[in-house]
Image 1 (cartoon, rainbow, N blue to C red):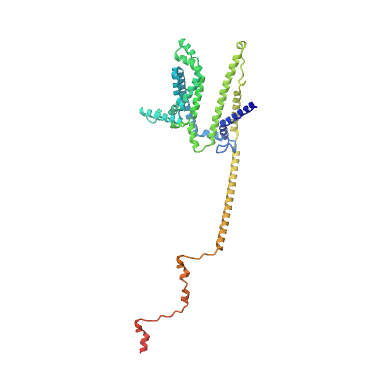
Image 2 (image 1 turned 60 degrees about the vertical axis):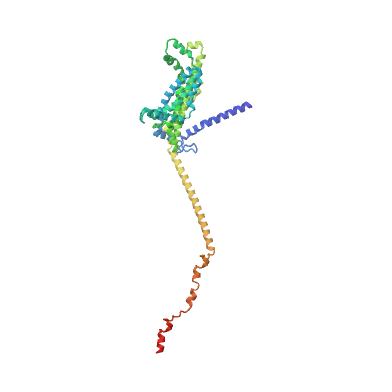
Amino acid sequence: MNNSFLRISIWVYLVIFFLYLLGPLVIMSVTAFNSSAFPRMTPWECLTFQWFGELFQDQRILNGIKNSLIIGAGTVVLSVAMGLAGALMLTQIWPKLRATYYTIIIAPILIPGVVLGISTLVFWDRINRMLGLGADSVLSNGIFLTVIGQSTFIASYCMLVLVARLQRYDVALTEAALDLGATHAQAFRKILLPFMRPAIASAAVLAFLASFENYNTTTFTFGEYPTLTIELAQKVRYGITPSISALAFIIVALTVFFALLNEAKLKRQELVAAARKQATVEELAGKIKLPSFFAGNMAAVLLVVFAVATITVVGTATAYNPGQCIANVKEQKRLEAEQRIQELRKQREEQRKKREAEEAEQGGAQQSAPKPLNNSGFGNVFAPNTLGGDTEEENSEPETPPSNNGGFGGAFDPNSLQTDQ
């Protein structure tokens, strides 16, 4: 019971682990085939290959890939050479100094990439000024600075890979070659270098991949030669498109293809070595029957399946036309947009009617209420009715003609003068 529970727990853990590790890559790869303008897996619209075409028409991406390949090649040469020199020095140095020397060689791995990029830029700028060179010299070139900056820490990775291989080397082989009259260069070229060839190949692949995906150090050193990671970071600032998903799918597909190819090759070599080891003397004298390429080689089978699937996808891409499907999706989106517009108009109309009804109710309530008195304050002194209250009474009284009295006691009154005559 406990063994079954433990086995189930291990399988559940492995499933969760690989989903967490590979889930984003699978989702991003699937979005490269969806016709949606934004990279998404759901809702699925139409199967399309147009994003691959847009990817190969993007000059910035193509220029970034070209710069990444050039910088990667230079980084591989410089890092593998420094890593091999460091590994050989580690095996030849005085044993009491090996720990100190190993710490110094590994230190660049622990330094942040931002610090390495800034220090590389500042250091070579000072060297350029000391030599009196201009801003367009080789020491100020973006490719040169990027290769130097990346090699400062990638060389440490290469040294670790080469040291692991060098620890299994028998120094007696070199000593025997020297005793037989070979020079140190001949012993290195004909004995040590062939032995280190597999480790050198592994270190070269590791250095190229580390250079291809590096961003922190390259940000400060690329100058006028942006790499692929720099271009992708700049494009993402303005919005991600499915063409980036297409690029991710291509990188993942190439990685899986070469991984299966290398695994199939290694498995083939192991099977051949085991067949030769188990062969009898009679079989060695005759013809040894070696296993076929697919016999006991699961990686080879997966490689063939992957190649067939790739050819099928490419053939489908050339013959498949998603135009009608995309047109139907656009028409459906248009109808949905019109329906939403109609719903919004209906909601606004209902809100308008409701508002008018409320305003009508408020207007009726105001008409039914009594009118307020016109009170202007100040004790109603300046009210119009108050000022004109006695006017009608004054107008109703008959007007008497005024007497013509010139004053002085009426001495100059004409009537008085006539009476006396």
